[in-house]
Image 1 (cartoon, rainbow, N blue to C red):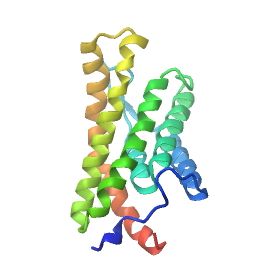
Image 2: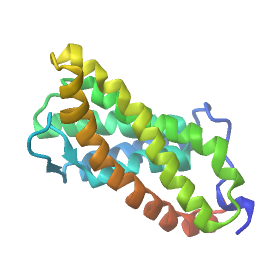
Image 3: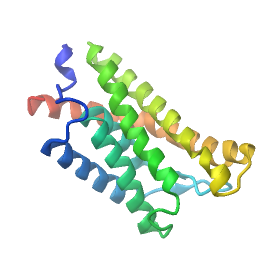
Image 4: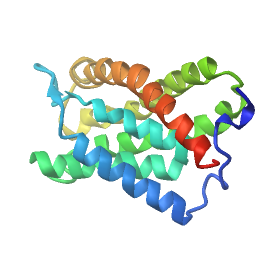
Length: 189
């Protein structure tokens, strides 16, 4: 596989019509598919949400702005639809957005160097997980917002989310990327 496997992009922070379209599509897909989730009993409203794989995928493939918008707006819409209120858990929506943003930044810095398909897919998994881990550390604000102790946050909120999103980011995000790769090549990107 050649180095053109990862599409060349405009500057990371440019807001073009392409970025806006992919951000809107990503947020809509995440919002609709994110409703399909399984609540983990005994946690602080943590779900196994397979659609979360879309957040780092959109960041990696379409840049940090599209990734942030996909995660933040998509999660706000999911919360509204399931009855939590659009910004009741705003810090978790920000963490979703940060996951997409960080995945976009990590991907821009690393993925262009991947010359083999298998290496690229492993990097997609690792970068997606790393972005998710770092971004969701920001939910420590639940200690003040919901009165949790550090131990309660670490086990009932962050730990449970880490478990569910690790499964999603290590399996589904690389699968999405593998599916998108031939489409991207056909589109000349």
